[in-house]
Image (cartoon, rainbow, N blue to C red; front, side, top):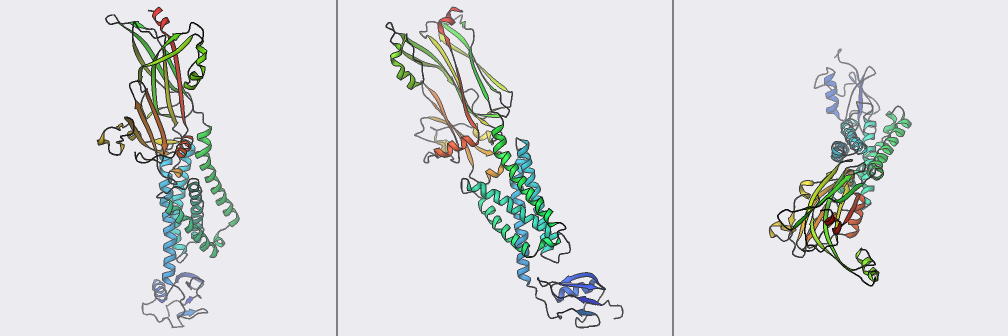
Length: 478
């Protein structure tokens, strides 16, 4: 026994943990007699040492029977603290990875990397929580857990604030609502334990955390709102008739027609839908100069009122798609389509008119599943399943899922879909389009207000151009 060191067992702290020291040097701590025996074995004491032997163990203020630790409460608090940090780590990583790896703009990628970095801090905080809720062998474990809880509070507040804008049901909502409540509980527990006492400069620490939260919020607002709005978005369209040629064997005139779509802005653009139409216009001429009497009807139809032209009539000669849904253009890139319009030599048209219209979406605001969107679903075929629609006027339907380029918006609302509908008749060719949470179902109707809001959110714009040429001039040039 002469070689056995004299051990001092300190009184229990507020959690019931008793420190153990030898010669003024801390050698461990214990929650129970069995934990104390483990410390003593590490010091070389026999396993069956008598804990009441005052020659070996000195009990300060409280004897060997005082062990106020509530094991199950302590383990439950540890499990809750670690579970919240791990869940927050997973959520932040899931939210940040798509933006960090695939966002179009630098600011959006930075936002994604900030979320991944915050997730890594949460993982470190989960490990620190095991020590902080345990024997606290590392001085700054409480400060690391505090940082994790503050990150959870800031990020879940951003999620909830974004969700409140539209209040849509989403699978992620229970997670960030639960984590928001957990972060309040964790901060209350940490502040109650006065964890800041272990931080060397608590005021500077608080200032740094506040600035980090402000930076994250500002960067989110910049990447989600300001930058996609400030970057110019222009899609320029041109249509031009060329020099006609006669067919040597058949009574036709071949009129070249060139369409061009060019991205003259600074952000890439999707072409959601497009069409071209070529008309032949025939008109009766007013001998009494009464053509302007029909100006009201001309205005209603969006046409022209002409003094010497009475009752003009247009007939569709050619119609089709320019590229089809899902084509995209980078800044400075253009696409040209050349057509040859065939008209009879004996044609009675006065004018040839060509129109080109496209609907474009900013790629810096969203990413479309093009494999889905480019797949055509004829509404009149039963094998198309939910796309079969007897009342859809024989439409070709395209549907593709669209993902916002800021993933925070994706996880705080329902999925969005792009829909394109083609309608064709013997005399006309037209389309309609929409972006909404509506997944095509002929028995349901989409929300028109939501469609208008989503068009603005994704930066959807329509562009059109038209050109006109005199048939008489074409004939004279042959």
